[in-house]
Length: 399
Image (cartoon, rainbow, N blue to C red; front, side, top):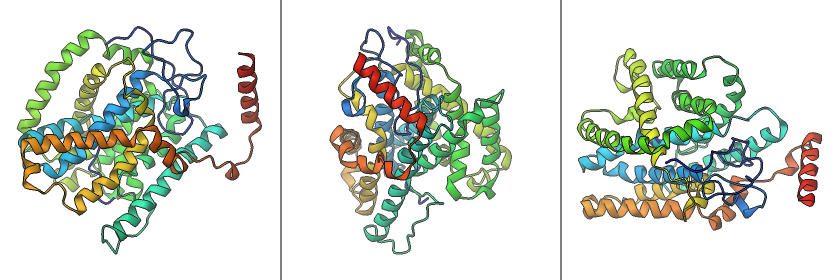
């Protein structure tokens, strides 16, 4: 992910086409279940609704990525104590957020300004942003002891920055599908942002623009692109690639400013000349894509016990931040035994277990009011949407 503590194989069946998710966040529902469900494609939809299928590959990828997010947040206070942790931190931060964003872009390919999709964008992104931005600010003020902490929806200072970014990216998705060279254009905007410190912190636009190329890349990707990186030869080649990345990370950890991986500052703010921002934008984009391809290559395509948790990754993402904040406030990771190899492994396992629990269905049911509110009272009834709902009911009755 980014430094969120700063205020502020081949499978036997093809991937399903991307469709607009129900809740405005990345999902992998296909318009209808395949004729013969296979382990790679069959899976329960959120809430266990029949007539929907989820691709296990993307659910697995989302779950594994969110586990890496939690691990990275656990490793952050341990940086400087162990060079091995520093190397792991640098490598993981090089791809876990890009992987998440590419998936988000891929499942935004059908987004347009249709009223029902705009409603889902509001209920699934805007409302959770407002609620969690407020909750984190109040937590910091009354639990964290920061009496000066105010609530500012224009200055996301915690995990909620991703919701701001997703809202902006998705609104611009129709435009990116019109231009001739979307990825180079997005890279140009990212490089321009990286040399423009005057952009400031409003809506965390530095992150929005610097991570934009990954979202646009997801928009233009097709199912066969994911099949390409999941071939056996790519899986084999990914092993030496990751080994080299870890070795480079081990060498670079004490020499490199890891703030580059957060994509939240311009080059000048990191004490580098402006041209370094252009170079680092292109270099990090290439490195992140390579590591992301290695990650996708090893994501299983079959269903496992954790596959269903992929539907609840946004829950785990937003909720685990309160535990992270508490660990910083009460210095849980400052004990000397934690900074031993056994202690580092222990807290890493605890972080993975915590994020796993927070993605489960009971947690989803408990917090659905904040993450997926219905809000029918707030919107007009759309005639086209009512017609689609009637068609679904009739199709179900005739099945």
